[in-house]
Image (tube, rainbow, N blue to C red; front, side, top):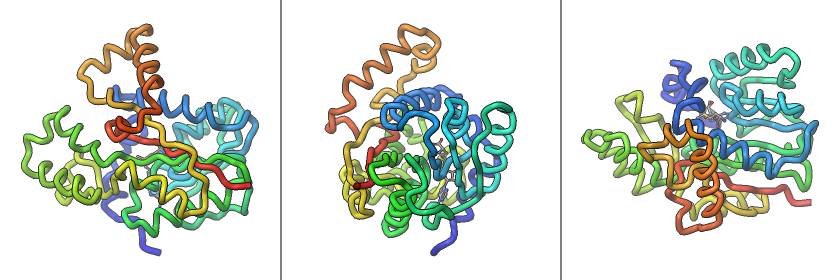
Length: 274
Ligand SMILES: C[S@@+](CC[C@H](N)C(=O)[O-])C[C@H]1O[C@@H](n2cnc3c(N)ncnc32)[C@H](O)[C@@H]1O
């Protein structure tokens, strides 16, 4: 099994990931992902695995709701941050947090009621590695249990390039050119805003990978929909009525497959067969 790319660990070494879901785009990603999780997860006190759980935002939130959440992540700094966040919510700690690789999990077969795979599928650049991660998520989940898998859209960097003027830079132009060609995202100069080694899925690739790993694919859902690059996102978020209308707008088009690639993140809803 290949090692995690050192540039990924380097990219996350600033610790920025801990606060990412609190910025404008991040808040929309978090709120929609939480909505999707609650739609598909069983009731608390279910036992859940958060694979690629990063600094623990989802695991800690789920623990506060009464779930037994177990986090695994390949970045030691993120596991440290997750442990700290868990320790700060005294009455609702996560059940466990450990450094590990989504492709080979140290958990028993069928030992979780539901599993999150929010991270590994866009950092594993080889298809066979993504299938391994999906197969491990299937193995540890009980029959009938849901596996929610996050991927990044093939078109996300193009949209971000326009929204944040990154496409003014010839270096970003060539990064995007390759993204659009084969989904292989590379940031050779380690520019802090240009992300790190990753794979961006074409929406049509997701279902077949999930199925190749032996999971039943139910649907693909847009996380942010096409709205994540809007310049007035912060204003929408500050105003409760607008925030709810934004969330409702995403819900109202979430089954429209022709729009799904415009969402930065897509969640594949998969289930372990009985
Ligand atoms: C952008 S963060 C996402 C964190 C969190 N799940 C979220 O959705 O906000 C991606 C995470 O995936 C982790 N990751 C990438 N490849 C992994 C692998 N093969 N096994 C475990 N974790 C992995 C990274 O270390 C990082 O913490």
